[in-house]
Length: 97
Picture (cartoon, rainbow, N blue to C red):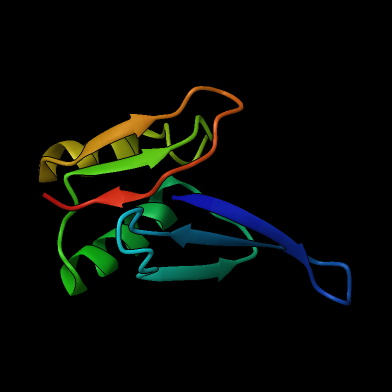
């Protein structure tokens, strides 16, 4: 799970939360927004996991949205492990048990 950044023609910056299953390469979510916080990430995760299923592990970087209390609490309550990558290493995705 990570963000892709882009910019609209009018100059407004856009962030897209991308969630990818590293084994099947299935992408259950590409969520564009102007801004993201931990609560926004939790909203997307909750919707996606209710549609697909809850993963065993989610690999994320050290971004402020992913190290937030909201995301940590969401993962703990649902038995999902947050796997934080080392700086400079490529991202993985979700792994279902």
